[in-house]
Structure formats: structure tokens, C-alpha cells
Image (cartoon, rainbow, N blue to C red):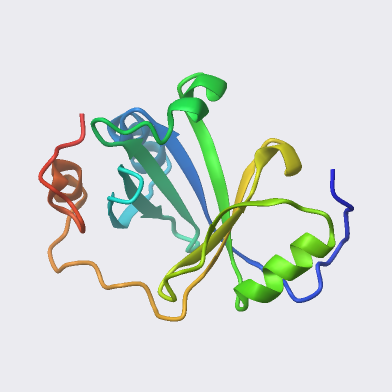
Length: 172
């Protein structure tokens, strides 16, 4: 494991959300929406990796992201094999300065994966679960506020494939 330090200089990471993946978002809703009271906040399809995400917000402002693969996707295959079909996929923190965060992590011996820095509207890097005690840790940065959700977008519309970047493919 890389050297542990109570505070990583220059990182100033803030908790953003936890991601939970399953073959079907609908299987997660009885727990995270119905039982725990998560309110639909936003979501959409990720055409880059072919999955759907839906975020729920709780009374204290914390969020959880529910994820499912879209038809033909292999994005979660190895995760599902390791995790018995689903579970906590990642934890996300935001940083103000992605380059400073990358430098601080590398200086402490972390090898980073999934660097995506080309788009100033969304940059991300990951600490591999092997280096983070079994958890995929995402660090993200954006120069612009997240896009507004289309007016009238509901959870059911999103699950029917009519959300942002949706192609009309309904969730199973």
C-alpha cells in the first residue's frame, strides 16, 4: 500500500456521493428510494461507457448514485463477477485542482487509473481498489456547474431511456 498520511497536501477533497451498481436499477429502488427515502435528483445515460446512472438525494443533502449496464455493455462485468452481481461500486470525492491532486497522490506512491482529463466540464481519476482497501475511489473536478436536468424529467422517464443522452432503451 502507498504511504498513509492523515492529510494529503493540496488535495482538499470533499465527499460527493457513493455509487452502487446492479444489473437493474429497479432492483435497488425498493431499498434506496422506497425504504430509505431517497428523492430522485438527476441521472442519465453515459454513452462513453454504456451505462445508466440515477442519483437520489436524502434529507441531509447526501447522495447515492445507482448504476446499471445498458444492453451490450461490458463495463460492469468484472465488478459483477467479483462482487456477486452488484454492490458498492465507487465512492466519489471532488477536488478544486485536479493536477495538484494527481501530483499529491503520485508523490505518495499511488498509481492512478482511468485518467480522463480532456474535458474541462468533467475530469476524473481513480485509485484502484487494490490500493484503496477494496474500494474504487473516484476523484472528480469540473470547471462548470453540472448541466440542469430537463424540465419534467422524472425517475420513470429516465428509466424508460428518455433522460439525458438516452436513446429510448428502457431499463430492464
